[in-house]
Image 1 (tube, rainbow, N blue to C red):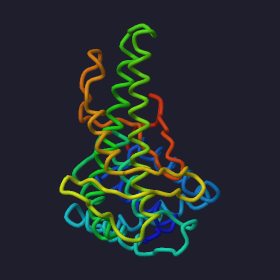
Image 2: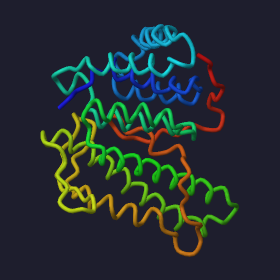
Image 3: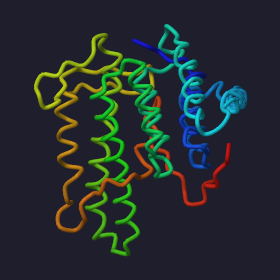
Image 4: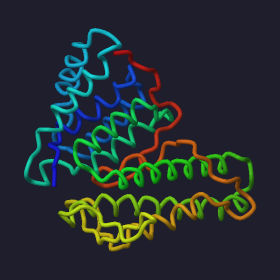
Length: 273
């Protein structure tokens, strides 16, 4: 199992933010949140040096023609520096989940961002079907959160919205637990997922990641299949179907898999590279 050293994982996140040509304030906020979750003790000490190193690499691009290639080169160099102990880094699946979280944090999951994440999945030998499942989970959870925010702002009375919001929160929780199960499974087993049917249902147990994630014992595929069945349905007759839009919650699994939602006054100005 590959363990990505914490500093190098943060480099990977920065390269992802920069791959579309700009790093937004929202993305930087998410970058900081992830860094402090992964390495709360030391992140602030080395953050500036990591950003400087990444920008130096990016500056070697001669123009748009080789910009992506330069980003990918820097990313590959970071990801090839693995460590042996789990407490020194994070797993590939946790890395990919956090990359997805950053990519959707500003509601703009672009093709070039998906391309670079797919590159990580491929070069780090992560099961592509697990990535696709993660991708759908985080999109669905974000859509549920957007639906919840819409309901709360709809002007309906508390008595009217309470049961709907509670149902949305339950579904959000199931989605997050399914994502946790996918990530934790990488630690439990050395071999890749085994598909026990043609429907993409995976059967494996899970264990905790370090001390920050409680164990989940579940049939990952079955639970996730149920999530999709629920999360895309109507909530009674009161809520419109959940769309495929990308929201801002379910965004920060990290070690603790907490959701960190920014208010409307968060820094949103883009910073050109």
